[in-house]
Every structure is written in C-alpha cells, then in structure tokens.
Image (tube, rainbow, N blue to C red; front, side):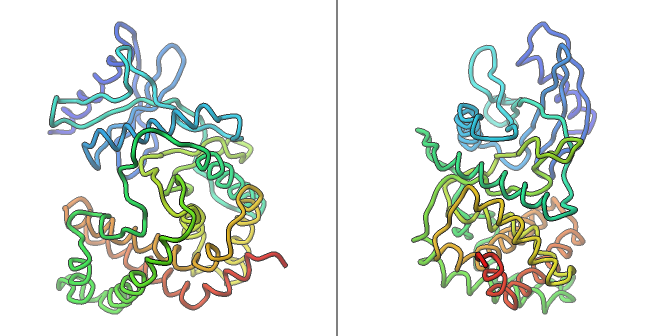
Length: 343
C-alpha cells in the first residue's frame, strides 16, 4: 500500500465512530509500534490508533477491557488514562478489511508533552504515579484471559527469536555484526543466566502490570505535573515488581556519575513505595528483572531487524545499550538495591 493510500484509509476511519458528522484529522507525536492520528470533532480531540504490530483482536479486546475497568477506578489516580470510545453499534475495535485487515481504535485525548526528569522531585512524582497505577491494577479482575505472556517467558517475545535463534545470533553473528561480537557474547551470557532464575521468579507475587511505563508513554502538563499514562497495549499478568523494574531500567544511564544515577533511582522508589510495599525477595531479585527488561528490548528489536522493519544501525544502538546497562547492573546491582532501602 502506498503512503497516499494509507492516509486515505486512515482519513476514512473516524466515520465508524462519528457517522454523518464532520471531523478533521492531524498528525502529531506517536509511538514506534503503531500509527497515531489525532481526530477533532465538535472541539473535542481524540486519538486514533492503527495497530501495526499484530492483527490479533483478542489482544486489543483485553487491553480495552482493562482500560474500561480502570476508568471505573479513576478516583484512585491523580492523572488520566486513555479510554476506548465505543462504536455506535457497540464494541471498540474496527477491522479495516474483513478477516485480514489491520485493526483500529479511538481513545480519549489528554493534552501534554513527554516528560524529561530534570530533578529528584519529578522522579518522586513519577514513582508515585507508577505506584498509584500498580495499586489500581492489583484490584482489577476481568473475565478475559491475558494474551501477552509475562516478561520471564522470554521465549515468546518474537516468533522468529527462539532461544536457539538468539544464541546463534549472539555467538555466531552475521558478518555485519561481527564488530559487536564482544557485546553480543556478553548479552547471551546474561540471557543464559536469566533462565536459571525463572523458578524463583514464578514464586513472586503476580498481578496486572502495564509493562511499558516510560517517558514516551507519559504526558505532563505545562507545570510539569503528570497528566496521563498512555499505551496499555502490553498490559498483562506478570510479576508485580516488574513494573518497578521497567521504570528503573530507563533511569539507569551508565554515562551518569554513579551517585547521581543511584539518587535518581532512589527518588523514584521513594514515590513508588508510598503506594506499594514490596516483599524482601522482590527487592532482592530487582537487578535481575531490570536486566530482563533490557534483554526483552534487545530481542524485540532483533525481531524487528529480522523482519526487515529496522535497519542495522537501530539494532546496533540497542546492542550497545543492552550491553552497557546489563554490565552496569552486574557491577552495581547489589549496591543499587541497598540504596533503595530505608536508611
């Protein structure tokens, strides 16, 4: 499909929600995985999402069911979440071509911009926002079964990235990735070590988790106050502490001075623990789970490269990032855990 044909297809979608009405459509900031447009109807804005990563109706139904359940608990949150808009005939999902077409949905809109964490108090507020959401998700039970597996079932991240395929790529990389041989060997070493810890991870408390909270999936207002948490596409049942691990993974920047990095993580955890009290074993395994997040991202982008979605340079950046963060965690993970504990 040409880009012109795609835009024409997108432009026709709002009619499913607003038959006989007039709307305008505009582009704006969107994520890497899906196509996003903004729709304005009678001075009200909405977010139109065209799902690009899959055509699985059950995955989207589950995401929407969780969002609607959270909408009933909005008083527990100090910010907004996207709410799927119901179609006139019922349901919240449009299939572009019957049987084989891509899937689309419309959501409520929140104005704001992606945050940058400039000082510790912002990170405390970030932690509070994540803690609030984790607490609300813990209270939700829906009749549908989650479709996405937990993070620790790493073999299911991408259909073409089985454990054996990952091993082959890391230990016998294609010629164009030979310069990254050292980094790939180390990544596979951590990949293999993770598998030994799976029985312990299965024993940790489980609940619903967003699974991808980071600055690109949050909005703040002009005063820097958190306005919304977005993109629940990967919400699933997982280890409770994985939500914390995902957030800390983004805060771990090995280029920062060690004291500053640990201070940032401690500030986030200060806000988070005002809503969630973790068990000792959850905290002990936190460095491993942060590594798991990095391994997950690596395998996700390896799959995108294998599928021809991303160029070599994108995967090289991911390899370097994964290597740097996992190595830092191996050297500093225990101290990081101690820095989170009450003094």
